[in-house]
Every structure is written in C-alpha cells, then in structure tokens.
Length: 271
Image (tube, rainbow, N blue to C red; front, side, top):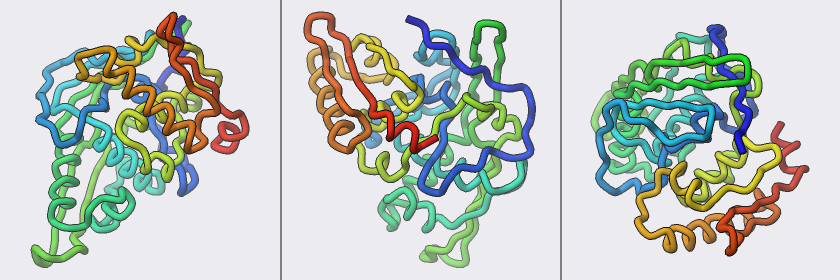
C-alpha cells in the first residue's frame, strides 16, 4: 500500500515554520527513510557516494557523505529548532554548551568532540530528495548544512560561540503537510530504534501495517538475522507504548506484520 506524500515546494520561504519550544520538526521525506539509520553511534561509519537510501514509495533519496545515524538526527533537529527563529539565510548562533544541554549529552571534552563530528558530517553532505505526489514531482538538492564554524577565548571555555548556516532552499522541505512535529522530551528518552519509529509513525495520521522486513530496510538496520531484529523491534515498540506515544503495538506472528495504534488525543495535541 503506497503512502500519499506531500510534495516539497519550489518556493524559498523567508523563514522556517515556527513551532513550540517543546517540539522539534523534521521533513516527512527524511523521517520515512533510512537517511538517519539506527546503527550504534559508536560503531565505524561508512562513506557513501551517491548511495540510494531506502525510503517509502514516492520518495527517492541519493546521499553522498559519511553515514548518518539517529544521534545526527538529534543534532539536525536541534539546529533546525535554533534556525526557526531567524530569517532564512541568516547565520544561526549558539554555544556548544547550550547545544549539549538541549541534547542531554555529556558536556565535557567527549561531548564537544561528538557534537563537532556530527555537525561536520551534516555539513560535508550532498543530498538529493525527490518526492512524488499524484500530480507533481519535486526535488531538493543541496547539503543539510552549508557551513559551520566556532571560536573560543580558550580551549577550556564552555562558552565557545558556534555558527551554522543552512541552505536557503532547505525551507522547501517544510511546506505545509510536508513535515512532522516531534515531542522532544519523549525522543530524548528513547534508544535509536525507538527514536526512528517515533519519527516514522509521527508522519502517519492513521498508521497501517508494515512488514517487519520492510521496517528493517527503512531503518537501515545492519542486524543480520531477521529473528534478532524482530526481537529488538518488539522491545522498541514496547518502549513507545510505555511512554504513551503508541496505544498498542504488536507483531503479527502469522503475517510478520507490525500493527500499531496511536492515541488520537496525543496526535491532536501535537498539531
């Protein structure tokens, strides 16, 4: 069953949409793909050259750059959050300490290095996203971050100033109904697979069943045995039920389908 995708727009908006402080926003095309995969952030990362990224029908993504994971999605979400209050094409300024605090990451040397590495990955990227709707086919091609720089008074200062510049055209990914709003505090409490599911199912007003193997591909999971992946998937779904994001979730053993139900009041509250 194909999902109707909202097309990206060719218009360059003056600003990203404004959303409340407790939410973060992500283009649906990215949430419905394996661009930010579920591999452990500590593992070695591949370098992709024009790699075709698994995505739902109607979405085509080609990516060049170092492999991105859910921790990179966290960073990208927070940068977009900072950028929403400034005019498009304006430098986004913040401190590394503030960013690490928002991410709930270690605020020591390791945390700063992890954050710099993640922003560098987002900067050194080339992505082409094509979204196909019934009567329209549109594309965004560019990087996730145009430039990144930081400066500090001394190497021990937690107040080093960071500057990020986004591509102006990235606002085309945020046309009405083309992006989803995520509860930030809920996301921060989740493990990588549950984070991916949290973003993915946020883009479905009325979720329909997906095959376990399909979700494995869409997540970019490297777990070799489907049986092991199924076990991890059940655990991640349970976490989403326990935190109240999902009302019910089960894996139909006979058809190997993931069947979930979302509580309508929760969905409406985030709109």
